[in-house]
Amino acid sequence: MRVLVLHSHPVESSYGAALYQQTLESLTKAGHEVDDCNLYAENFDPVLSRRDRLIYHDYPENMELVEGYVERLKRAEGLVIVTPVWNFGFPAILKGYFDRVWLPGVSFELVDGKVESRLRHIRKLGAVLTYGATPLRAFVAGNPPKKIVKRVLRAQINPVRPVTFLAHYDMNNCTEETRAAFLGRVKSAMERF
Image (cartoon, rainbow, N blue to C red; front, side, top):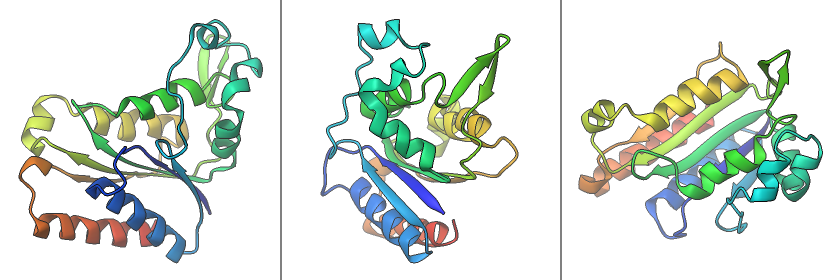
C-alpha cells in the first residue's frame, strides 16, 4: 500500500522527529511504499492567500500552487499523521496543509449542496500525536485533535473503518521510560498498519 506520512515538527532532533522516523521505518518494514512528507523540511507554505480563497471552489485552478501535494494525496492508499499537539490543535503548518491541499475537487465535492468525499481511495488512517496535556486535561478541553482525526478525517476517508490513533500524553512530565514505551507502541502499530 502507498502510505502518505505527514510530519509537522520544526526540530529534527526532537522526540517528535524520532516518532516520525520510527513510523517511516516500521511502515517500510511492513512492505508499504512510503511517501515521506515532512512539511517543515519541504518548506510548505501554509498560508491560504487572498487569491487562494477567491479561487477556492474553482477546480482545477484552485490547486495550481499545491499541485504536487495534491498528486501525492491522490496517490495515497493510506495516511498517517505524525505531529505534536500545540494549544489543543495541530501546528499551523499542518493546519495550513489541510486548508490549502484538501480542496474542493480534491478531497471533496459539493453535489446538490451536499459534500461528497473524493478520498475513498485512502483505505487506512493513522495518527501519532504527542500532547503536553494529561489525558484528563485533554478530555476536559474536548480533545479537538483526536476528534479531527477520529471523526472529521475518518468521515472524509472511510467512515466505517477503524483508525490507528496513538497518543503520548503529558509530555511535560514524561520520562525516558515513557518515551521508549510509546516509541515501541508506534513501532508495533505501524508494522501492523
